[in-house]
Image 1 (spheres, rainbow, N blue to C red):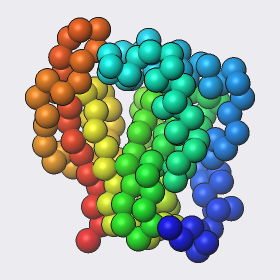
Image 2 (image 1 turned 180 degrees about the horizontal axis):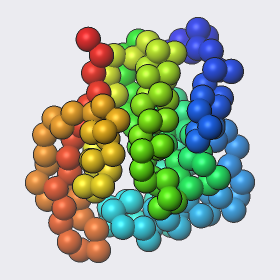
Image 3 (image 1 turned 90 degrees about the vertical axis):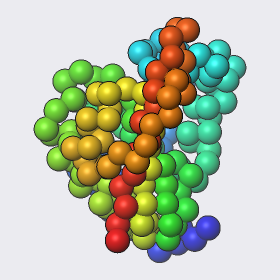
Length: 169
């Protein structure tokens, strides 16, 4: 994968709300693991063990991924499995309730466009069982592509997962 043409300085702090989260502290890592385990619909039951979540969080900062801190540790927005010239997946964990709103959507749209430009992406995708995230993604330009019924289990209850994409023609 060729990341040499990417303007990393441009991506470092693209908007007031987002900055690259390159080196989280041990305390921040533990907080993210705790949130993934306990926050509503953050991770499915089968992933909600400490060992699995440690591995998942290590992957966030170990793969061909770009993770952004939202505000002052009020969430993370990640571009995962980046394939320059093609696609990436987007993950959002937003625990700062004051971040849900128009400012987030406006700045997220800017960030999405910038990442797509820098990596020459034609597609971003995401999936979620959380209807709040579906609404936020739609406002940010994503379109619903389908639903996987009873795909996500949280505290023993089944939820449908909405599949979404943002495609540049």
